[in-house]
Image 1 (cartoon, rainbow, N blue to C red):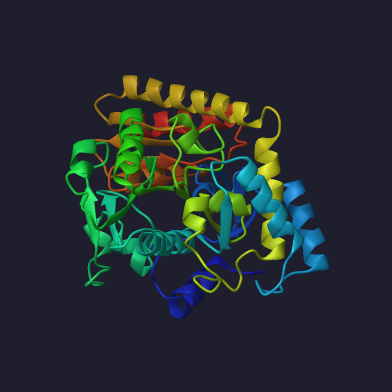
Image 2: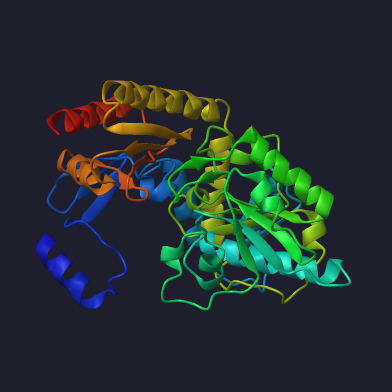
Length: 399
């Protein structure tokens, strides 16, 4: 029998300590529950950071994985494969995009998109455009280009000098963006919802204003929907709730059903600037991963599913707002849209609430120092949502 303390000791000895993890070891999952080595069961309101949209052990996902693994696991992008082509077609048919680039993570898709922007800016104009405008408080990953375009200085410390040509505007402040546009600007980078930055939701006016600005100044508009796409907000893509379409959009997380995937969706005008050899990913478009992703996307598009997400989300937000009304001296604000929600806490750090939830067999995640984040699987039932809300009430009552 594997012992928890033995695994924790080996982890501390052999794995680079880039994560702060609690002292338990997860062993398996089933439905919307996770189980540790000691047999404890946890109701999961993290879903692998918005990855496990259909929870754990989904039959359709497992079947697609097993079937494709038995046929062809990997052959590289030197050759055509069926699952990636079918997935690309379905993505294009259900989005603004004309073309798809596959890679292995959200951060990889962001790095690829930065390159595509600069390639477009260098080929479209006689004087190349190469500068980016990103947002303060944003988050786009931890690789070099990603942290360079992330508007949180804590991620920059120790890694300077960063990628040049990046400036930062204030989220939901269109004038601050307009002031930064120059003749060298090629793209504006934004998350419809700043997830890691504290769950700040863009206003309609802001995103619509960015679209108009990009059209007027001939800039690319790039959306990061890595965490908030794939049904998380109640529509397939968050941008659909704003009557705004980007020129490039990055996806990952839930699309892979638990396997590593990254996607850049592009309009044809951007794709026309990209040539063979400009970018690549050895494991991108892996047959097993794209077969699973195709299954995930079909499940999201099934009749009534996104409507059910909207209903579950309304139930979650109603419960959290009731708590805020009851505990107004503790809960400052409820943020979010769909099944990404955050409570802004006043008197205690979010980490204390996360620990209190865990002691009561519920997993939640912090989002900055004062926000408790709820990211349940999209199949979380209303009575399970009620359980988490009741536990939160108990935590607040006990102080």
